Length: 129
Image (cartoon, rainbow, N blue to C red; front, side, top):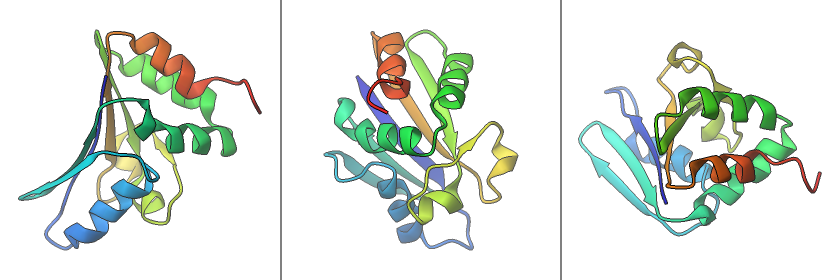
């Protein structure tokens, strides 16, 4: 399994703040943060990087919306979800159904797995609250 979160950095933005917003979405999970030119990317292997996101989806009661967006965006063993960058900057997960919903552009969460359906189910499951 491979998880990545990435965002473009506009000329008016501080790349460190974009990186911090991305890291807010991963909690304290292991992964690798890369900054290159006008993009910041976080890459991880495994579900540890999705635990914080899973908890936020549960706490904010948007699991069904996340499941629908991930299912609609699925292409083979890859799916993506757009997250509002400004909300991420303050540690809140807010889903976007289009890029226009995040003025500076969204953070793209991409999940690639041979068991993608199971990962989406785990991420958006209703057990435990």
